[in-house]
Image (cartoon, rainbow, N blue to C red; front, side, top):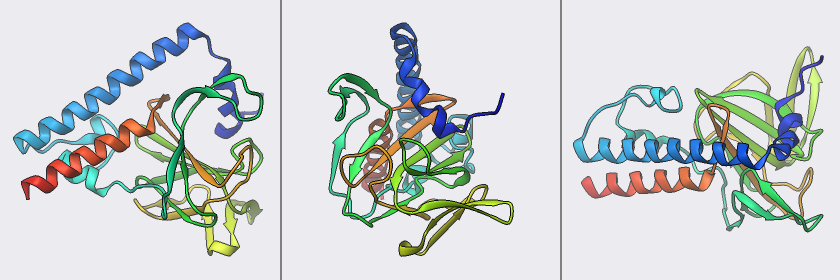
Length: 225
């Protein structure tokens, strides 16, 4: 059987049972609480630790310094328009699980890679529209509804956004903060925004919890300087 792409498998997550969702929620909550607790402990005791044992396969440094290197994914950010979790589907009106956080910004605003890693997939043939998936150790970050399209040239697969001067190759390495796309309205969307999804060890994580942990660690670090 032909292996489905990650973005094509995206919709299959909606079919999981309530019991499975409950178990996954507990696992996600435990992981995030452990991550935040470790960060705060490292700040309080000025310990060095290697977050690759917990998350992104990064070099050995304090958690505070690590979070400071993470990038907010959207330039010209305006508002959070739809949170992670159950919501009323804007098309059907039914309750559906929303596997990400929607961040609104003006059309054409640049989207940056949250973490350094490898672009493991680019796609433009799913409900995510023109999309990219970046792998960073145990983390996977997903960027949906961007501008541009995907082309195959010389055996390579590229996300091309000529208007933004972007050409992202599937398989290439990207640094934290690298511009990998622009806000658009491709795929299943009602307005210009980034749908940002996060997975840790294969389980969905609420991106808002990660952003809060980043902010808290950065604030605590700033107070100690």
